[in-house]
Length: 496
Image 1: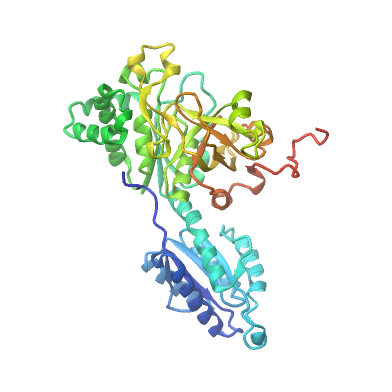
Image 2 (image 1 turned 90 degrees about the horizontal axis):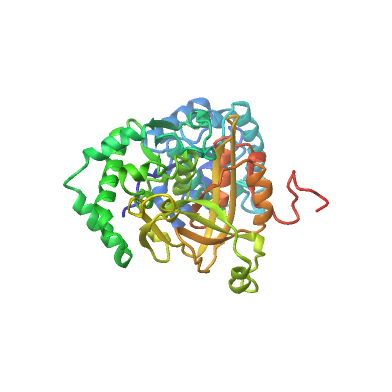
């Protein structure tokens, strides 16, 4: 399936110059930066603003108009020398999109008289003026470098910019209130509006009506055939595929008809307690298919879970999933399969699980089955529709963006891996290992009052996600991470 529903970033590079410094420094250094980027990365990622070197407010207006005309949705302000802090920060203020500041290092010891640019100094003034104007900008960890180093910094900016652009054009579509006796994933939606995200809240009855209107839809056989191809030998419930196809078409048509003026969409769906008895199946497999093509669908009306998944999809440009931080790894499994083979304690490991919402490309093998937990109290035939299998081993990033009960933004990011260990369990599930997970579990997840759902990106994307959370307004002290053993958490007992 085609991966879609995320932005394409085009970053406009605008060089700036303080009028008492040689303009040629900024011209030549910008040219070298662009050449270095195009030699190493996709040239379509960037646009070199040729109109002017920004030295004044008039130049700022000309450059702003030029990058807009070129279709740039992200901005790189490049200090080729000290730079004009007023004009350059006005440029950032008036650009509608994510912006980055980066500066040129000095080239050689032979050019430290007539060719010294002092951008190292100018970056300090730029950062101060950005704060004065309440402009949030991405500034790399060490924002001064050679042409190639700055090219690498710009490339690292792109996934951050992609997520910010995506949020500014996102609509979350939800169906139904959270399930009864399920307060965990409920959170105030005020912060969604603060982030620039729209939300459309619908009744389950609206969805049910739309589903029935898709009965005998002529497209159902085509979708069923695609499902059969995807499932292969794992197609153990062929009788349920027409209903699942009908539901998939219902969601896709709903997205198309309700997208409105927004560019991107994700869904927070309902899956119990009445869903399966009324629809006659569970939606897990359909959720996995949509998420696999870039339209994240969270379970249990987890609005901030869907939001987190969307951010992960933008950053990774790949499928993500949403899992329960679910259960411990039994001692005998740890001793047999992990101890001595991997550098993790038992408390560093846990199982991430959900009923069957992880797309097939992220499972070692998959089978269409029924939802065992629901089937304990319901007829098995109405709980069919889960996609089960062990999650593929490899690097992962566990993360979540959340609004607290008093409507403050909070987030966490933790890098780890899925181990090549058979789970011997059910659902979409894997044996996860995160360094110092036990302490992270206690002093970030529990102490931070996070729900049990976490988004999972397949790869190590902690650096980009951390920068995204900073750039959208999460205070650095409110971004939790799995701290190394020598770094004590604020709430950690020092006498342990």
